[in-house]
Each structure stands twice: as C-alpha cells, then as structure tokens.
Image (cartoon, rainbow, N blue to C red; front, top):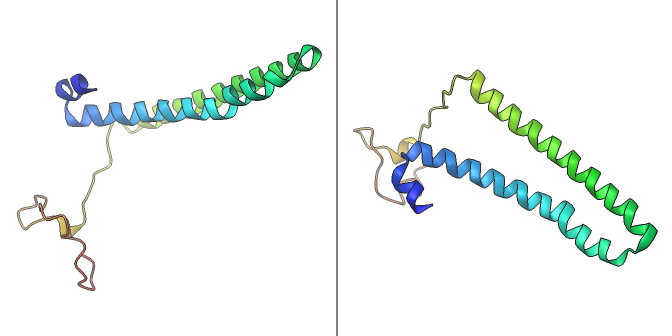
Length: 117
C-alpha cells in the first residue's frame, strides 16, 4: 500500500482504495454467508445429509458470484457511459476561504451561526 501511495496520484490511489474496499467487502460477505456457515453446520452433517447441504452451499456461492459480477458490470458500464467524468466535489462554503482554498481550521463548520453556510 505504501508503494502504491507513493507511485500513484491521489485520484488513482483513491480509486484503487475504493475498489480494494469493495473487494474486501465482497470477500467478507462471502465468508459470512457461505464459508463459515458451511464450516460450522457442514461439520455436524455426515453421510447422506452432508451432500445435499454442500450442493446447496455451492449453488448459493454460484448465485452470489453471479450477483457480484452483475453489480460490478453495472458499475463499469456506468463509468464507461459517463466517459470517465467524475462528479465535482463542492465542499461546504464554511470550509472555503475567499481565495477558494480550504481552511485549515478543523472547527470551521462547527460554529453555530444559524445559517450553516
């Protein structure tokens, strides 16, 4: 990660971090829904009861994989159709100084002024 952060630009590293977080989320989902239940419940099954449970677990794994591929493909398609344009980030006005740069004061938006802006 450190090498990537040093070699990539901020936006490229941000994109990598988002994609990596998505992969970790998908892996955690797969572990929680399929792998661990099979390891716990499947260990108590024997003989004829084990085969149908494993077959059902494998079918669920396949369905989850197909769902994740569809979601990823839709995300790729949305990025492709938009031409790679990113939405503009507009910080709250209380964080911008008159020059348009960010203020360094961490409590700039925490002051109760009534107009919140």
